[in-house]
Amino acid sequence: MIDDSGDTLEETEGEVATAQVSPSYHIDLSWFERANRSFSMLAQARMCEACREKLGTEEEVNEPVVDKKRGKVVFKKKKVAFGSNPFVVIRDCCSKARDYIRADQPLLEIVFRLLLASANQPLSAERLHEQLIEWLGSALGTRDVPTAKLQRVLDADRFYGIQRLDLPEAGALET
Image (cartoon, rainbow, N blue to C red):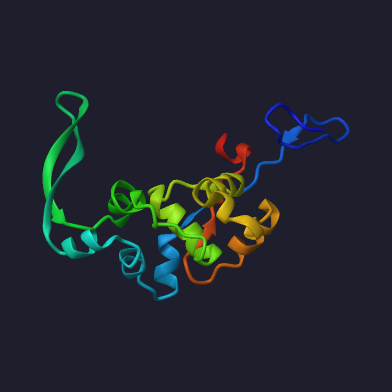
């Protein structure tokens, strides 16, 4: 059975139907530590030339801080090394370039760049597939990969740290 959103519903005798949701993926920074690899180096290599030239320089950023006396969040100016958060740099600048994602790049490279551009916001396999089509359009052509196959490719990643986001079961949260 299919619901209005297009999700598949499974019904079993005496149970309420549950939606089959495709897994979400993200870049797991702890994977890089376990693999003895540098996320920073991999991410910085995906920055545009202008941002790579600014690496190591100092920039001023607004950092949210809880003001306990007033009971609200305020922003404090803080100096940090440019690129210390590559997700923000790539999301705000580098991913805007027309050639940030190209049809001649390997599939996992493209997905890595999509996750960088989303500031590592977990994305479902369906959403990643939609973004592949948005970025590459007709250039995707014969490389159009069904969502199930995309999931298998992502699950087999051993280079980019792309991992399924394991969410606790709904019942596990109710304790």
